[in-house]
View (cartoon, one colour):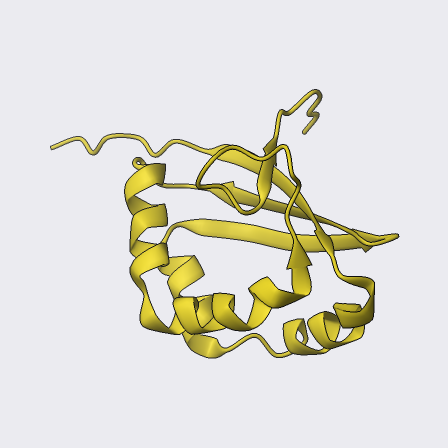
Length: 114
């Protein structure tokens, strides 16, 4: 029996971090809670990185599953992840142009080279 091939997609997202909260944000990300990391992995997300420059955060990750929306709903329902987001969100300043229901604003991929 053949299994359906997994889709691989790269995601880039951005938002601002409040300048007075950046050092705390950085400190907390040096020791992300294990349950949050486990949920990220269980949601088929890998190669997840967050970069910072001048108050802007850029997140990059790769999704290796076959139902991104379902996996993100599972992440958004995870109690440990929700507690983590409750700590992170007051440090963040989402873009005013984001779509309803978004926190991190997704970006369009313009170029990629392997």
